[in-house]
Image (cartoon, rainbow, N blue to C red; front, side, top):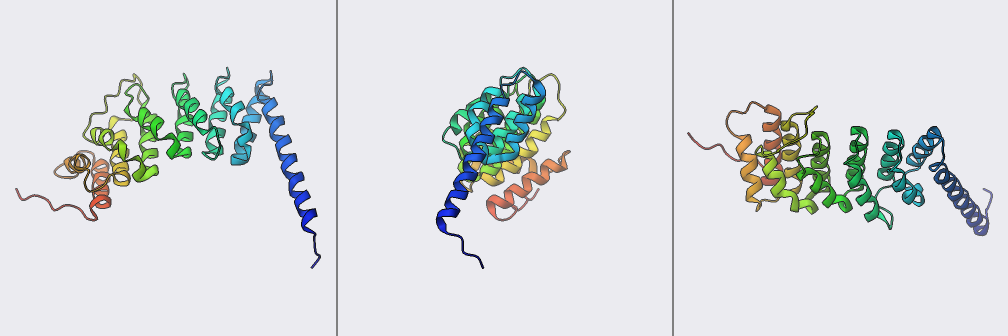
Length: 240
């Protein structure tokens, strides 16, 4: 086996890093191109690089104000792929939170999905989206899923999730591709991940839809599964 000196390896690695940084800076410049297709492609390529493209986070945040829907969408997706491992993750979360108010549904969904990917640093933004009745149901549904993925550290969301499970979604959007029950299902599932046995408000909310006759069997099943997760077993039904 041929021996390669450590110095040579170090220089090779350093050269690769410099080359990658140069490529990322080139893509950052292309994000400011006058050509829409060039900006779209730059955002897509940065998304493909994932965490390695963290240097481009400020440029991607700026691109969320682009006039083109696809540039905004791809930039939001890229920020999610970069994730939470950046010093300026708070700025990214704030920018994505604003993007959930974008005029285009595709951008809103890309923003919330990226917040879900970022995880714990995006907790407050996800909770705020879940509570907001003016957000489209798909965004609120994704926000509930994201809180569930965060797990016990999202325990502060228990009151809101419990309220949603009992049917108080208060959706105010005019067009709905999903029913309020779709939000309730994910809220019920999330409670199983974030609530503890002492969270009586969660237990009562889940019991209210897990027992008796329910039209929405998917919601009932989600509530039952969450009760299993919290208690370790389904509670016994009360005798009539």
